Image 1 (cartoon, rainbow, N blue to C red):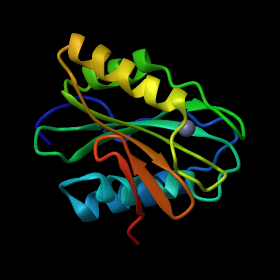
Image 2: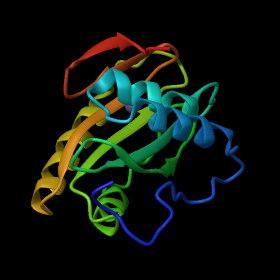
Image 3: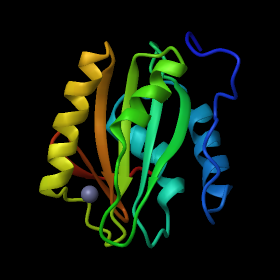
Length: 161
Ligand SMILES: [Zn+2]
């Protein structure tokens, strides 16, 4: 890893009532894939974090300059139909790790990854805020049951397994 120092690279806020099993699996997947070369690989790494979730969760993934995962952090916990995604917390996580690249993600418990108008607005806001701070939002992924939507690619795909 070319960025980040002194802290647990997989640091996360303790989930309120959540299970850590998803993080262990996501971590194992990230280590197995190494370089996150595109949205399908990112979706594959993140899928265990939201599998069988009945509420929306928001995560930020921080990547180093070689596109390897440095940190995955849960930054929001919502309800069945929405989650607040704190852009400031996502940007702080990147800055604290001394990394430039971040990916935002959240899940749709309905299974349909098609983004809402608010999701699109959030993506634009986050992209602007990241650029203002010298960071780069690589993507915002919406994870459905077996599919995901990538704002970078602007379409839906099957989550690789
Ligand atoms: Zn959404």
